[in-house]
Length: 115
View 1: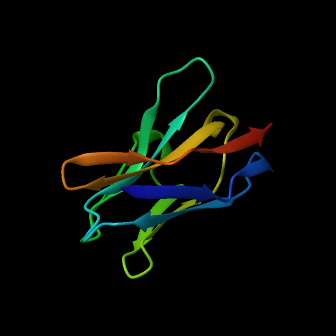
View 2 (view 1 turned 120 degrees about the vertical axis):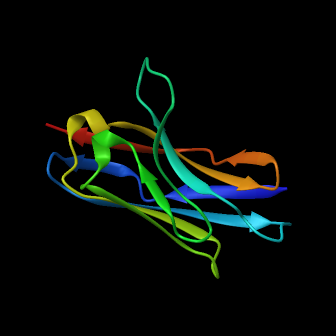
């Protein structure tokens, strides 16, 4: 089992920044890919960014150039630096981890960007 706990969400004005963290704990040998997803009210959950354990990254077009995903494998922690935030970035942000063939999810952290 893998437990994921997100932190760092909050309320910020448009143009501001936030940094999300996701700490993984539990019984596992290695975490493969990790990623951030978000879900806005009335919309489906969508990929924001993901990263392999070797550091290869992938971003949604809507966040390219503004968000940066990173991970610290020694600490089993995932990060998302979000700059130049826009109201459309508002939503619940979920951490995802792939261990073996299983997907694990955090409980989510709310990000609200006011205009």
